[in-house]
Length: 432
Image (cartoon, rainbow, N blue to C red):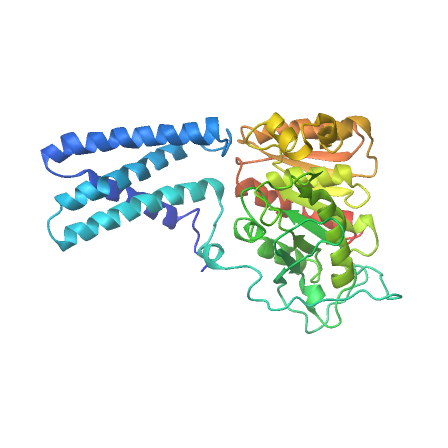
């Protein structure tokens, strides 16, 4: 189940089978090769150009961080689809027709494999098939009660019990709004081994992990391998790790995501900064000692959200990691469309919550953060540098890290995993 899908034999085999499949689909008698195949090539080229125009010029599905070579694989996939029927009609016998179908599937599989290698969304077979949060059962709640001891468990005062599991658990839970009115889908919660033992560690710190768009909480466990990353950290620190909560950022049934702002499209910022922390404190007895126990981290869209939370709610999230986030929230229609859709055209209402605008007006001497950028990230690299400069000018204790890779899990995963020790000291698990 841990067979690698982004390195080694599998992507090479997928590429080779795709090439062989395309060769089979293009092979045939002279009339087929000189007439049908060129027409299909022209159709594939037109389809690829249409995809580019629709995705990048009209609808803004993605940006310059999208690896351009993937359009070649898109063209191959379109070509295979266009050739499957004429190659089927040309084939004589069941075996040849089965080969035609299998060849088409091989080309499409090779194209999908190339995209997966580029982004690292599914690094292993296990990450492709597992559904995080559906095998751990009911989340073990630790209800906060008045007068309970809230001394945080740290490496200095914690002794693991004999029955402490070697791995943490992942649970799917609904975190309802409790004042924001914001609709959200189920969240995922990672509880470290020290939380699950008897006696259990108490008052652990909290990390809010924020996902990208499109996407959902499960992406942190597929491409980001969050459970393994946190279990590895816990294994080095007597089972201790932050409680990690991955809320749903999609806004439930709302087609317009909140952008982690309070707007006409929902009070997403208040949900993340007030409702979610309240639920965590009341039901997991975590993060009870105040802001020093709280951090937000996210990648891409989630990185932008982490910055928004740190700037607009520094009393809740004085620690953050912005991994390949934008310099401001955006939507495909552009800034004017955002202002109209979210703020009734009021640019001032947007600026009042936009991180870079707020950083120009306020200072943040008690906030610490890390801005992570990918060396080959054509768009977010430059925007991350702008965020770093603005945060530094506002007095934050800020770092800028450049990692190998583009806008992909190669950067996003390491952006969190490589900074867990810093986070552990910042949140108190490892001491000051």
